[in-house]
Image (cartoon, rainbow, N blue to C red; front, top):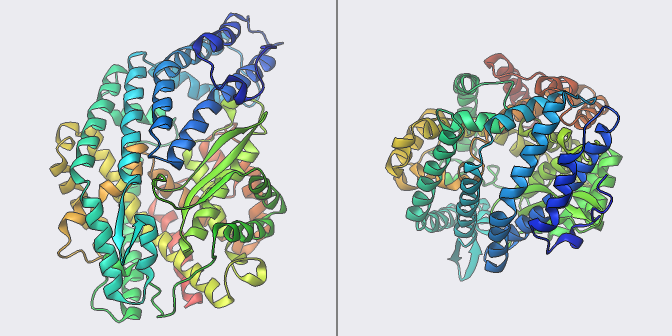
Length: 567
């Protein structure tokens, strides 16, 4: 089937829809039977990988250099000319498979999701999706160009972060204010951009017959196993259990630093008064040490990372015009498909956590790419983030140089302390981001006014993050939503981090009892892809999927217990 389909993306680099259309038509016209469904799904997978490879390479190139307008124009052209007919063809193939009544082994969950995706598909939303991507690219351009002159040299905001680890509080404050002022300079542009995104996404919801974009997005993200109300339960549990624990973390920091209050520029400095952690000199050293650590967690993970280094599937250093953040994507390498890690390393301790995190996604990708059909590979972000966040914790026994890692034993303990504290501090921040989006997309008429967004963010900040002192920094505090790229680029993709963190801490608890067994269960769950439900994935990893305060309390108690041992 599809005997003449090219084997590499390079062969179809210049292809237009006219060259791709016959392959979709062949699949659409093929009569589906129990005897040929396996071959048909594999052919569809090969076609998806070929087409998807064109887009993934261009998307990657764009974030690697947001100032390259040629790449941006090519990507926009592809989205305008290829995206609509491809999505229409994919919709017809989905409907064909669903109408056949056939259910290949391991496809039950995927078919459930495909039914919902077919239900919400609207041709009118194809053009809106293109417009949405253009706005997201504009967000990348704006934020990718944010640099400051600090102490005589131009620095990206990511590079400026290292100054927040300075023992000199005045220097920390000066660097923080410089970065904040630069971000506020784009306040109007980002306000306007978000208002456009809100209106556009609401139109998508109306086209799909949904009351609001939250309802549409819930279906787009295949959230079958929890509801918006479950998220509100999670927020309340965080407020009850984690907010007091976060206040305890910050109070210890205040006392150790000898301050009267903890300000935003006091959150990254080492509270012991020791120099900041500098785990590597350059990103080649970072990659080499990471490979040693992954090999200790599981030799296969070390092999996977070695493959990524050998095949140049890492873009680690920060630079001007590089898009913000970090991510793991999948790109074509010859006739194969491989994970690719993108990040912005500047030589600080959080870079180690980031490479562990994104590599956890990569190892998940290596495993799911072994599954025969594309439709059964992606688990959804809730468990994808378990894969990444668990790797941050499973790597902790090997952080010391004696174990192949980055630090002296004392520094390794400092790194662990920082990680455990940041997990506790993360849940309240996650609740702010998630609750903000629930409000924005169910109150679009209010949220298109950025003043209302600022007010809501300020209210949520006071509810969940009140232990931090932002007195006199009102503009920076209420525009915090500008600084969370997920709000612009990946709407509603944030509660997953909080849920996954609960799963990851449970895996860590298992590892404290039996590291080998915990890694075995974790690895086994990565292999399942989308062949089982989300709660079943958590169960396979030796954890429970939940939102309740009891589960959160267990996690917080474990982390605080570890912090006491490290004190």
